[in-house]
Length: 287
Image (cartoon, rainbow, N blue to C red; front, top):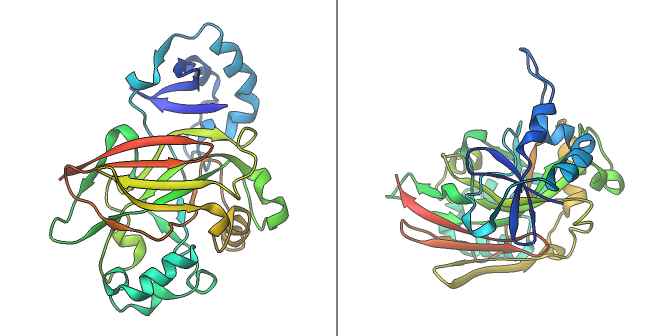
């Protein structure tokens, strides 16, 4: 199943090049009073809503995919977890280019030593909202990644069991201001996490270990790789993350970017794709 958030926070199913509006299903979500439960309410309820979604599709109004304005497929992630230098060639690229690490040795440590980092939830947007450059005096780079959406509460999960806690996958863009500050700071301005264009559920995309991914800017190919080249694959990243903290439904795991990161500027159009998920075009604007 391919699920999306579109237009004015509508819930859709993408099929046959159309978006089927199944927003009515959201009315069955439980209401909560403060303090609210951790995680994204829709992602948490997804297993029990699937039959209702399928039924709602039969009478759903549709629009073409080209007409839809896609938002982030996850509305309320509790946290966005990201993996630094998780492709060997990107690590080599960073070692060779001072503009990528600013002589900060922490930016060049192997992922098992560097650990993961968190991005601000306020940085999250969807394909239609685009990226807004906030510091024109500094270099800002694109980074394309496979994004993993967690489907259930997970703590101290072993790698061999890890994929069962995944709700689905989408394309992720981890936009980065270059500089000497901590990664979490430089990667968290508004619009600097793009998810989209939709979420492909884990029962449809069953194997994330060998997916081609790429990004071009204004038609120029910048990054192209395969998830088989990840240093820590999806299952290992979930094991690593949950050895330190609990993941909740709707939490997002950005798995790392390959070599070829490069600058973007207002007016650019980024075209990103991940095999088995699809593709999206993201506009770059000035603040």
